[in-house]
Image (cartoon, helix red, strand yellow):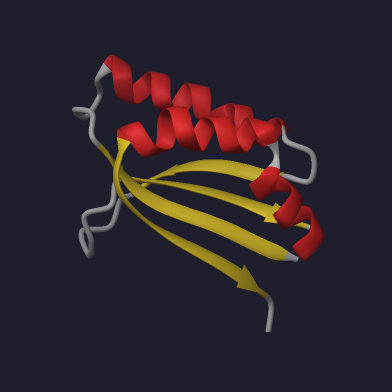
Length: 96
């Protein structure tokens, strides 16, 4: 199992319509085959200044690779993520 997580800061103002639209539209990622346990998360810690997170799980590396190459994911990254995310950190985990 691979847990894929991204934490990020949007270019949009907090609570703006653009912020809400980005989060709403990102839910399309949950429908990509192989994606399990998709979650959208809001940062509550004062230890860093990231605002949001997406977390999802994949059965194995093949499922994760298929997700990364899936046309819906590629389109979302190109048309939304690259334009609307100011900065991010991506972490992919496996159990030890």
